[in-house]
Length: 77
Image (tube, rainbow, N blue to C red; front, side, top):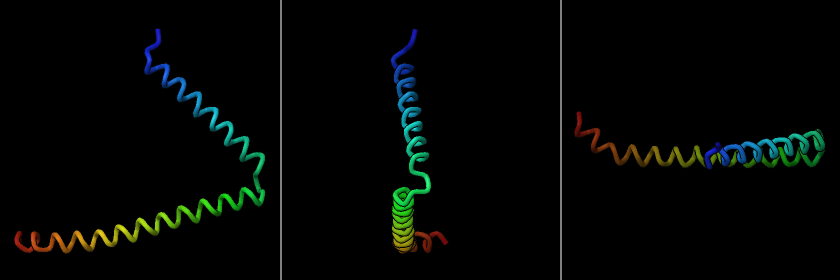
């Protein structure tokens, strides 16, 4: 007898398998096409912008954290 969680797991696996099959069919149909190349380039540009934004945010937060922790670190020496 199956439990409710097992039913959800099986349904989720079936959904993921169906999505992967659809993606695979799409990739075969549009391989080496200008549309696929443009979509890939757009996705790559989006990832690059997100990485640049993350690096900028991390650098700014590091400076602020060091400024806030400087008095504490000085008092521990």
